[in-house]
Amino acid sequence: MPKNQSTAAQSARRASRNGNKYTEALRRARTGDAPHAPHVLRFLAERSGNLYHLAGGIAAAWAHSGQRVLLLEEAEDYWRWTMSGVGRSRSRGRGRRKEIELATPPEPTTSTLRASPDGPGLLTRHTCMWEARHPAQESDRGFPRTDRSPLTAAMADALDAYDVIVLLPRYWSYPDRETATAHVVLGEVDTFPHTDCRTALPGPRGEEKGVPLSPEQSAAVLRERCLGFLFGFPHLPIHLDGVIWQSNGELPVDTDYLAGVDRDMNRAGLRPLGWTVTGRLPAPHKQLPEPDQLKDPAFVQRYQPIAGRLRTALDARPAGRN
Image 1 (cartoon, rainbow, N blue to C red):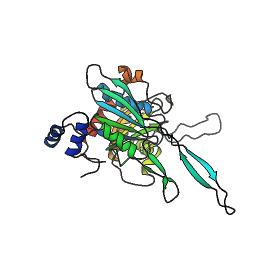
Image 2: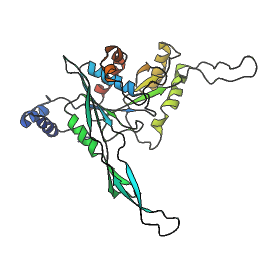
Image 3: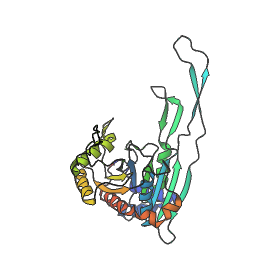
Image 4: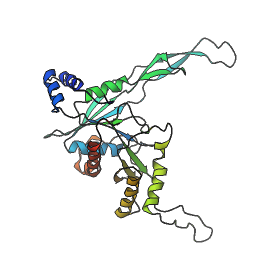
């Protein structure tokens, strides 16, 4: 059985926990009448601090279109280790023996960010710990062992209630091969590379204007500058379902130029899903949009084209692929 793929019996058991009869749920699952498993989406980004509005806007656009969307967010690291010295070192150059005390973890929190008054559209945010640490079970290097049972439990509770689950980890740059069924890159562009480097010359002329780049050259620079983190250690293969670009400033090129950049990205195997333009360094940093913004049709409208293309890409992907 492919990883992350539920059997009919597992789906029926989850449905029975929600109040449905197990035998009826099992029959629907075996005959294909049961709803499909939700997409579990993981965004990838080297620096995610300015991209929360983009992720939240896409999720809100899905909710406005009638989908049930869960933002499953990893809580801040409240597992604070307090180290207290016990005894003295026996020889010079050796550290003191330590004992570890585990702080009380935070309770999970759930809030409804947007609920349609006359339809199924729903946007929910659930924040919880994703890992449990066991100081009594140290690894070979002396660090506490961790397991992801809290995330597994949160996922099990959400699978039958949502159409899309968006994972929001504390660090976005690492793929999640255990949980996610789809990965999409969010590329953040501070300065769009439409010319080559400028040269400062002495005299009244000052700075020389750079030579214009072709769309193909611009695409190559973007891959090197903004997507290089995808090709670093540990070099494990990952299937990408597309790339979305956010420019932190007005783009200095027209739509035809961007279309050429997208064609070259597609040639390189990076499916383009759209461009969005925001003010430089959007605030607040590392925070989702406010609930009032997520309910505002004017705010959500700007993300609807990208959200539509992304949902089409997710629905077209092979079942069980991660």
